[in-house]
Image 1 (tube, rainbow, N blue to C red):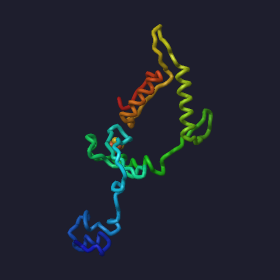
Image 2 (cartoon, rainbow, N blue to C red; image 1 turned 45 degrees about the vertical axis):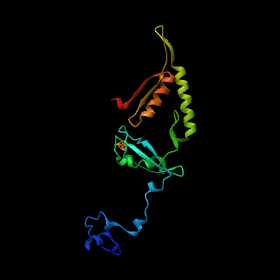
Image 3 (cartoon, helix red, strand yellow; image 1 turned 120 degrees about the vertical axis):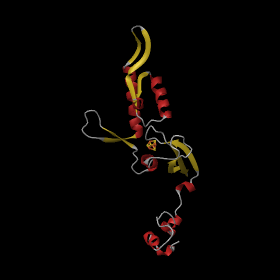
Image 4 (cartoon, rainbow, N blue to C red; image 1 turned 30 degrees about the vertical axis):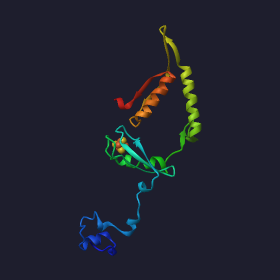
Length: 187
Ligand code: SF4
């Protein structure tokens, strides 16, 4: 093995170490030896599903001090067998990344510019609109037959919704009386 004091990995490979391809000892350094995987120090590991697309790759979510510290592919998943595509591999950013948004951008009717709203305000506004639409377009019967439905609410889901989310959405919309419930993944 080429001596480590030679420093630069290319130099270590060049002077005749056994690791000519630079995939082992030639690329090691004391600094690298000191690195520890975030998975090693996690308090617990939680099984999950990648939220990005309908493939539904299995994930292992590593948690330390109640914070997500790493997300990796789950080797036990029959769907993905430990693999994640680049998007799924970067899903740690979705949970803790600096770019994560905690506000909503809103443009009022007849408004000419966008404004930011906090999530609680936005959720209250959505709830108010759902209740108003349900009431305005409620039908007790049609052609003398009971229907008890609202035609004022429809849902079109996307392929990033997982089984559990779709289940809850169907329950919610059906309970509200909506009958127009679709998903793009059906196409
Ligand atoms: S890892 Fe990639 S392929 Fe798998 S579910 Fe996530 S986005 Fe889809």
